Length: 340
Ligand SMILES: *Cc1c(COP(=O)(O)O)cnc(C)c1O
Image (cartoon, rainbow, N blue to C red; front, side, top):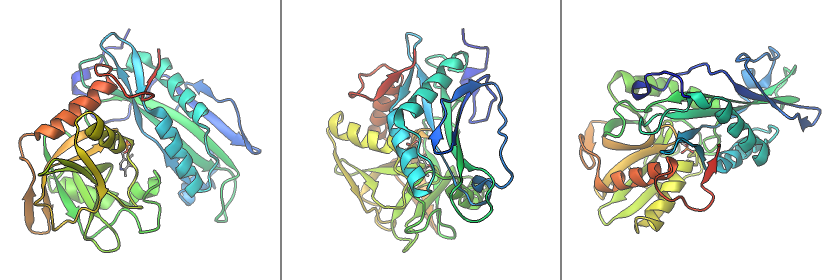
């Protein structure tokens, strides 16, 4: 039985659910991990995650299907990415099997909070890996905590599947050329708070970041990747070592090629050569597929397909992706993990 919530009007807000998973890494190994109702972490005041940013996280969703079951979308990819993040920050990696098992346990334990099919809402799941323990020098933590919690959410960008506008950031970058842009770490988000808030205050959904070295090519949106559909029907998305490799983006890339029959390319997208791009969007687990109406580049207002209507290919990609996630469209091999 699902709990009684206003499922159609959920925002993207924290909600304390009954259960979360927690596991500790100590003396070189992970313990078995367990579900707990304790939503507060108890850690040393000198934990490196607090002082030196030695932490990383993930984001994925559980979906309610038409027949009432619960399923996950490509959780093995989140596990692999958290392992890459752990490697970059010298943290203890969480094995894929342990990661997926933790996520399944949390979705199952909180099943009453997985939104009903048809509301568009989902259970957002947040795995978190932090370095803990009593050290004050700059060095990797002796111990780690891996925790997974969850909450029901609605659309990340207000309005759902409707175009919104973005602004190009020239004053701030989210990542350095050989920094941690490709790792899902909190520090990248701390760096994006000022430009993000400036963008929200001036009426934009979010910021579009350019390559930090030259400010000439598109990198990504603050918390989502960028894609475009060119006038000759090619799905294009930026290639750069400082972009966070979005699982949604690589899924769309595959679907564009194999389900929609488009040409696809990970390539350079110059900010002053956008006339060739007919449709544009932002994509990520939270953003899903969010059509971009227009972007402001300094004084220039560049409209893509339309500021009020999503383009036809963006719409098809959205339907194919969400169809798979909610179990209405046949998934490619290995993309869906059933929770119950
Ligand atoms: C998590 C994230 C994304 C989206 O990745 P998905 O795997 O599609 O959810 C995009 N950009 C940044 C900066 C992110 O942190």
